[in-house]
Image (cartoon, rainbow over all chains, first blue to last red; front, side):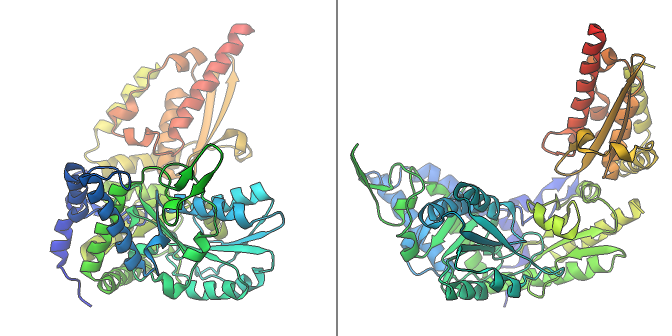
Length: 408
Length: 142
């Protein structure tokens, strides 16, 4: 598969990539934290505010109609991108964290009682741990954690044994933000469904790397953030199966989520509006759709293929450095690579790499329990996107080599 | 030497370095040569937890003089810790409370003290002042 544009054309779509950091060309390898935005998204946002700004679903006037139409078209774009069954199954939220909190609250209110259990995995980031812990505290429920191997592969045997008649929901990440592991979500979902347990898949690190097909996964919820898939900040998606969402109470009250309001009783609107209280981030939603269109235009398989080639190059290069340890060596990985060069502290390495113009993430990556699992206080993560180049990967390897020399 | 004289001395030392690489190599050397820190003081009480690196700071107060020993798990942070100890240790509480720190900025390490960095250094400086304030209050009331 070939990308629909040359790498030079792609890079010129992302103006920020030509930034100079301390006078050196910026090497942006922190795509797991946030991705850069193409001009197609940047210009669209400007155009929206210039020509199409009005509140969605609230007016009968020309502008309001126009923006409502585009907002609903964005919903359709998201639906098609993740292959959901129906447009009303796409709820726009503020991001992954907001989506998980919404489910933890709404689902928790409806179904979770004292003594019930919630299953997550040991490789979750804080956003897929803390909302469930808060729910457990509210309801006196228990959190169960699926262990994983040193290589970063979930222990499915242990997972099966954790499922019981007290399990109310399983919440697992599609892709580990530290290890890069692509989890076998289809298998995880099928196993839970055998016991009639619904499953939430955290797609924060999954959406930007390839094929998300919620119909194929058969998951009950899939959540992600726009900013991690080349879209704007502050927009995210909660996909939920209609039959599941219809049973859940709304988690926020306000405008647009209601059918009738009197002081005695309020009745709620239908999906997806029931879960979109208040003025939504419609510019964000339309911008997100433009970002997804951009990926589709490049070719999703081609994007994955290119990223895998860059990952292989980085893995080979970094592995050749003596004493360097890679965290996460699962057979199925996305293009991110976490490592520590010998006994060198991640913050020391990150600071030197930064001075070379190389942007990586250092620290716990919002996944402290995972770091504890490996007995480390943090590591360095290079996360690669399709717009990165072979030269940039080589610059990283060279930079890490230099770091090991400096601290030798 | 006064606190400002030491700050000026550090600025002068760093002025001889041509580029950032030499500055950081010097910090790494400083980190390596920082005096020993009593492992028994590596307790939560003396820990300043940053998101990126950890700093331990132990004060003692004798005959009107505050002595600090400190440590960090990251070497570059340790180098900067060494500089802060050099500036603040062996001082009276009043000297520390009244000090204005300008050397960090002058030697091009300002970003290391940014609150968003969360490496424990800014909190360490605040903690040194807090200890000094506490000792000063104690002095005034004894």
